[in-house]
Length: 176
Image 1 (cartoon, rainbow, N blue to C red):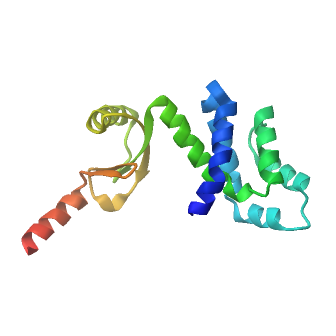
Image 2 (cartoon, rainbow, N blue to C red; image 1 turned 180 degrees about the vertical axis):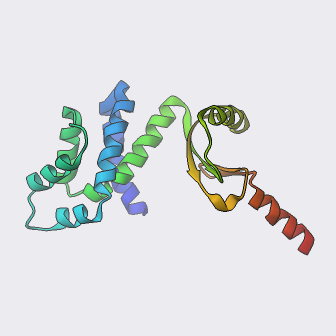
Image 3 (tube, rainbow, N blue to C red; image 1 turned 90 degrees about the vertical axis):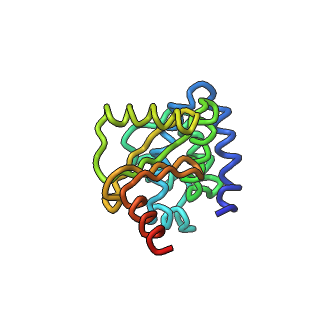
């Protein structure tokens, strides 16, 4: 994976510099391109030596929900011309890291046993931002095996207040 990250870094940095103040807008179309580029059939088609770069470009743009701005079209053509379509998801991840660093924000995943409504998520966001000492972009994923509570992952930090974790702690204490 380090090789893909190394290949993706210059693309992400160049796009970030080119996007300038519209990094948020670029992130939207870049995420959409990354989702399309994640398709295995598309990757196989792009790797086919009989497929031209114009054909690959046409297939990718034909699948997109929204029309691409000029910068996105140029970026996509560059990626395809250089045979780096399979690296697009990693480029999007690295671009997101650069964008978040500029804003002073970090991505956080909240694993919850149940759906969290918007008001509760806003309250949780305030508590977590105070706990981690930075602005967080929360993404919620359901994980029913937690039984209750939440498990929050911010980078390499984990805050686990789930019922499952507490039961595991009790089990370890009783068997020790």
